[in-house]
Image (tube, rainbow, N blue to C red; front, side):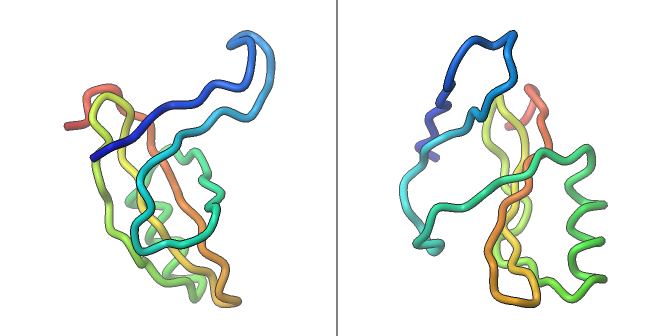
Length: 86
């Protein structure tokens, strides 16, 4: 997977870092939330009426992410950091 980390400033100061990847099925800018447990967060989203649209996917050396859509049609991502992801 082509995936490039983007840092917006000093790592010691609060900021909004992110990443850029090749466009796939999701055709808009997608906000991604940092979660402690991707599986638990996916379960919470689906119980609340959301839908998983891209299953747990590894980003080697970064972690695991998934895309969901909420009941109003808003797409969002969730990322569980794990430097051992393969």
